[in-house]
Image 1 (tube, one colour):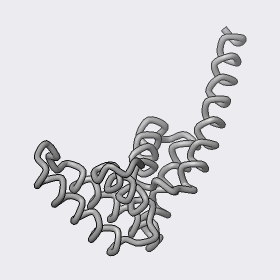
Image 2 (cartoon, one colour; image 1 turned 180 degrees about the vertical axis):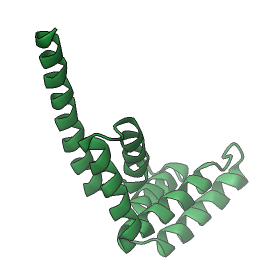
Image 3 (cartoon, one colour; image 1 turned 45 degrees about the vertical axis):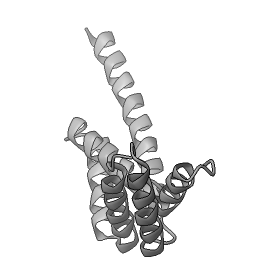
Length: 127
């Protein structure tokens, strides 16, 4: 029994260390929208354990950091634009125009880079 307990304890510690490393990487960005979702999942699944506490702390830091909040706002706005149906040429042109406005408004963000790539692909410039 004791050896089984020790083996499980060791495995849990290793998994916790891997999660801690993942949390650190997620906190670095640049895709804070995906990171926020992953951290929320880790915080829920690892609640009461060090990895869960670390994820919750990282989420709290996201809430206090103005630059990260701007990134999250930009990502949410881009997600709305990405839902646009592009089956018709007029809708594609409208989306390309909206993406250009988006890029000006959220210049310098990770979401802006994603929007520029999407706009280039819509216009047939690769990306």
